[in-house]
Length: 125
Image (cartoon, rainbow, N blue to C red):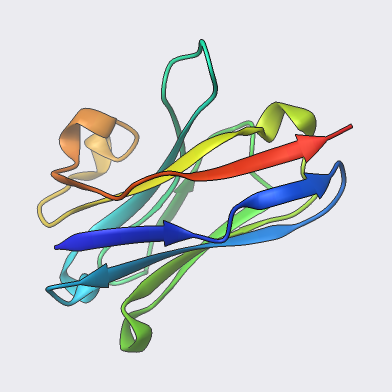
């Protein structure tokens, strides 16, 4: 499955953005999908994930209550709604997918088989 992340941009602190991860080649409904981010000079970190059937979502503590992950299988797309953005949220955001992800690996980027290119999010203070 090929993944395309989009929706990044420049926003002021306190603003919102919605990222999209759209799949081609195969239907995304059979995959759990995660969002990760990486800022310059920092390790890649888990942001959020949603299981294949959408009945479970997971968030990093740093974004819980501000970000919401959702999926529209009819559109073959997973979204990351980001509200109350902070300068610390500045990073390249990547979506990833895996068909056989287990809950204990949901925040482990190495457990995902498919990755999209990043979309840059810049939050100004």
